[in-house]
Length: 433
Image (cartoon, rainbow, N blue to C red; front, top):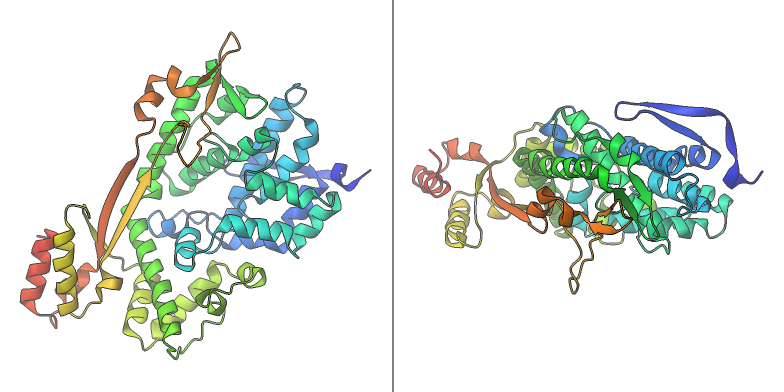
């Protein structure tokens, strides 16, 4: 029997709070889970700084990756199996891509990427194609197999149906993280009838379609996603923690460029600071490493780095007010000047943060970003775009919601060493009682 078809002597199961059990029978999948690059995902939280808002949000990219794999396994083995539109030879490729789709995420992923101008999807492909344990396992399937897995994740693989299972507006990735994140944060918004959606999925040449009878379950899924973004993912307290995290990384990078003498030398950051990060450097990074430095930098002589690290580690976060940067730029300019007068560097202590989400959209010719819409399979076998049939989805299609918040350290307004008149002017501008 070839390695690609090899099964374990006995099925392995992971007990899972979302899917009850995650089943592994394929030797390739079991070997991939055992690689050091995949095990690294245990040390990277799925929701970054959200644990500082919802204390249960301690789950990892490892949990989520297994969940996405399980959903894909169920779709392929239980729903698509035997259907003429599904090529069974794509089974293992789909399972591997599902399992490995988040392999390149870094610690506190999105904040980390912004500061150091990195892309986790690029690193995912590098890990799959580079000198890694993951690559060694995939090479045993076939010489070109790692390339195929990377192409699925990069959305360039020739079989668009396989790509859509993992990356579309109703894919296994979203279906897992909505439910998993809802479970661990303790909210009810992210729950929807996944069992129903899986039962009404049908394979087509270039994407998964949904039987018309399952439309209401899809409506529920889209509204769940909308609620999760605004109630959990964009929660202002989580965003405050991300602002401080980002400012710490910016400050550390700036100090390194100024040849500052760190008490605790950031050796794991040097290649990032100098924009020469290698794959070997990158896979050594996880959140335990980052938090170690934040813990140690609470003792640094630089007052800004020391203060920001103390704030993050002890959850003394910034407060916020709603702001419209386009209309209130004069107010922001005045606040910047007052912060400077008060001895608070506005570059680090006065931050406008914006969040934006598009709950559902369909492809419009001429737009830069192609959005693969959700299609319904009608009773007469016609294919109809979801918003053409659903009044609920039509009402939110293409409607981007954006909000802006101004973050600042409220505690310094109680500091007796700062000029009282300056503090009063700041309070007035911030509309603080």
